[in-house]
Length: 243
Length: 250
Image: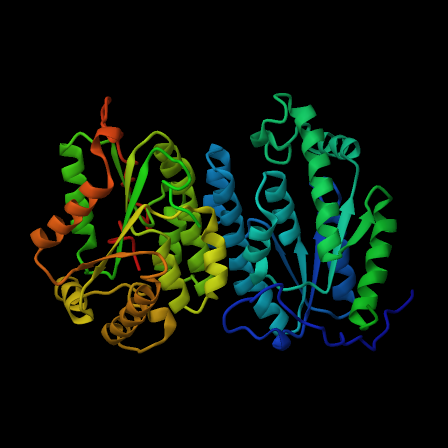
């Protein structure tokens, strides 16, 4: 059996910065760990890919922490309740998610990075911005709002065509999620049609954001291992400071 | 930024701002009673009162989970919910909306807590400016005494304890309120605050308020023909985080 190498890679220093003013009192240069974000729709294979990356990173001696949307202590329950009642207007929805994000940023992401962990974010600000853009929120407003966010070391967007996403979601849960179908937008009364239209709009929003934020678009339609290999190679380069 | 009148809304928004203990809540309550008696379509909205967000805010405050950033964002969420679900439709429908605290409370508090002013203002730029903003300016000692005499137990965030200004809550509260007052004074000209001398007697202040409202608002355009809407229900329960906050919590 092949042994894992015993000499571990110590990640090189990051060129740390916030998108805007950041968090009061936090110095970006003190954050030694690495922040890796994986973006993509439900059914794009995000969770599977992240689970494989955690396995791989930990085997290689890196400590990891995972964060995701709606996982904050502060507002996750309230956000769920509000979404179930469908009573959120767009600015409120946007700010509610931003609060959830900021809470995890300050209480999980920043302390973990300070301690030298590799933080894997199961979606980051780009999903939140894309959703808001599709709902007509002003891009400059969003850019200011997410000025609190730290620039990740790598961002991967798992791109999958809407008609493939619909198949994957139905195979998994036999239904389509109300919000992932953008039903609040009134694109169509039909869940299936709405899902396709909404995911198409999300894809466009991501392409737009990609031009500003320069993340890596990964073809998520391929086999799990193939996608993971691409991610591992790119993360390797990040850890060794070659990217 | 424009006022609701400048944006062509048929309704008008009147806001009151000032320190805790400045007497602004009493004044806006008396204004509301008068407008109701005059048959004006009037609605009252209080800072930090959205049903949707309240439990999260209370939890954050009780467990001292809030940082300057999340404190700011959760209050912005609360404001956005009230703004989009109540204020905008009512102002479209020609109501006189009275707000006990508006965006200036966030501008003052969040800035004192160390959030960049441009960031805070950027977040609230979806909101139009009030048509009239009354600023109740009392001497710092007067407002401090009103609070400290009546309510000896200060809450953590209300006293600004998160800023680590002093380990003594009373001392912390004094310093914190002093800094907020400075912020209000700095905004006063920019946002055309109508300053009311809050050291005066209640009736004297209310006289000034009513005179100005009378000059600026033509009551005939705001007469109601149907009953007043009910305020959003106050949820009463036995949950651990449902204690009603006073004055919107600091």
